[in-house]
Length: 114
Image 1 (tube, one colour):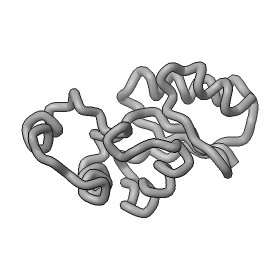
Image 2 (tube, helix red, strand yellow; image 1 turned 180 degrees about the vertical axis):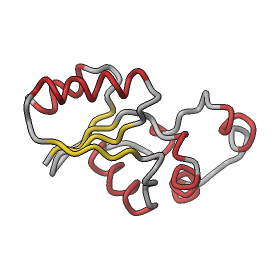
Image 3 (cartoon, rainbow, N blue to C red; image 1 turned 180 degrees about the horizontal axis):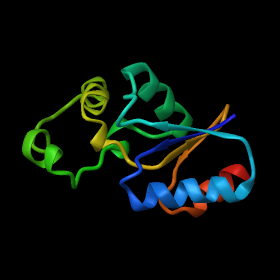
Image 4 (cartoon, rainbow, N blue to C red; image 1 turned 90 degrees about the vertical axis):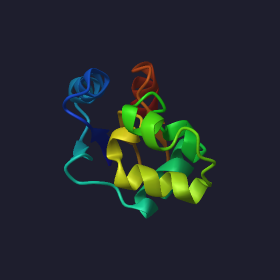
């Protein structure tokens, strides 16, 4: 099953959703601002993404700049911060059973579901 971690207010996330809709494949939408991700879910996603936690952080967000930018956080702490502040998670993320991609650029999604 394909799943998109979606924020309806984000243009890139809406573009990712549109790609999935046009693909006519079955998929599930998880609005992760409404149904936040646990630390375990973020950890599992990071493994599928093959990314370090800091690579998934939106470092240009005000929350990050004001509270975390100048701190030396461990991977575990970064995951906790993302779980507590879902706005800091890159989006959209599209996940399949065995892998995941950040949909920036949108072609990442197209390649994943091809």
